Image 1 (cartoon, rainbow, N blue to C red):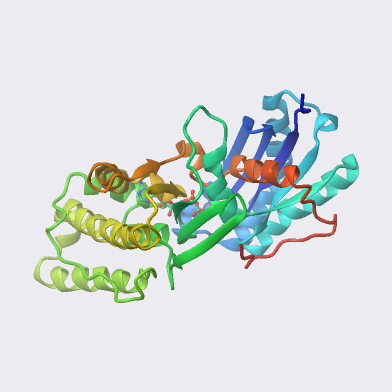
Image 2 (image 1 turned 135 degrees about the horizontal axis):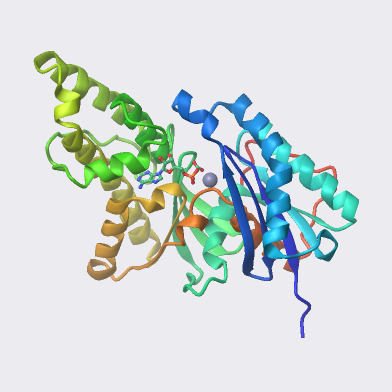
Length: 338
Ligand code: KG4
Ligand code: ZN
C-alpha cells in the first residue's frame, strides 16, 4: 500500500492568511484569517495586507497543525502560493514556507494560485469532480478567466479580463451605492428583490472570449448621476432595482462568454471557482444550462471557492506525486503565469 502523504500549505496572495493540512486528497484543516482592516478603505490596501499577514501567519499555521492533529515532524512537504498576487503579501507566505521546509529538511512545493482555484475541485470531500477535459470559469475579486483544463497542470486560458475582475466590478459598484466592503454578497442579496430590467446597462464590445468591466462601472456612475439630477433620492429609492440591473448585466456577460467557450470547445463539463461562485444569479443560470444545454456543472463547497490554503494543498499533492519540488530559495512572483 502507498504511504500517506501529509502536506502543509500556505496561501497569502491577497488579503486572507490561510494554512491547510492535507492527507492525500483529504483536507484535515483549512484555517483562514480574513483581514477586516481593509473594510474602512473599501478595498485591499497592499501595505496593510502584508503587515496583517506577518501578524497572522504564525498563529494560523499553528492552528492548522493543531486542528489536523499532526506534528510538524510528520509532514512530507511544505507548499506555498508563488503567485499571482500582491508581492508584499506573497513574500510573507513564501519566506515562511522556505524557512519551515529548510528547518524540517523536507521538500518545498510552489503552487500557482489560479491553478489552485481550479484544482480545488479535486479535493476529496464526497462531491463529484469534473473529468478532463473541462472548462473552468474562475471569478473572484482578483480574477476573471475561462480556462480549458486538460489535465491537473495542463491548462489553457481561453479568455480573461482586460481590466477589472468581476468581483472588483461588484465591489466598486457597491461602493458607489454606499454599501459596505466587500459589496458583492450585499449587492447579490439586494438584487434578488429588484427588477433586473429596470435600467438598461450596456455590455462591453470586446473579443468574443474577453471580459471588460471598467466601462460598465462608468455606465453605472453615469446612470446614477443622470437620475440624481431628477431625483436626489434615486440611489436609495431605487437601490434594489439598480442592484438587480447590475447583477443581470454582469451575470449575462459571464454566461454569454461561457456559452461561446462551451460551443467552441464542444465541452459540456463546466466548473466554476473563486468567491463570485457564491452568486445566486450565476448559480441559477448555470443550473438552467444543465437542462437547456445538457451541461454538467461543478461548484465547489464555498470554503474552497474563496481564497484558501486547501486549494494550494490539493495542487501540491498532485505536484508531490510528480516530484515537482522547488529550490529552497524559490521566491514569490506576483505575475506568475500557468
Ligand atoms: O475568491 P475571493 O474570496 O478572493 C479573491 O481572490 O478576490 O473573492 C472575493 C470576491 C469579492 O469581490 C466579493 O465581493 C465577491 O467575491 N463575492 C460575490 C459574492 N460573494 C463574494 N460577488 C457577487 N455575489 C456574491 N454572492
Ligand atoms: Zn483567488
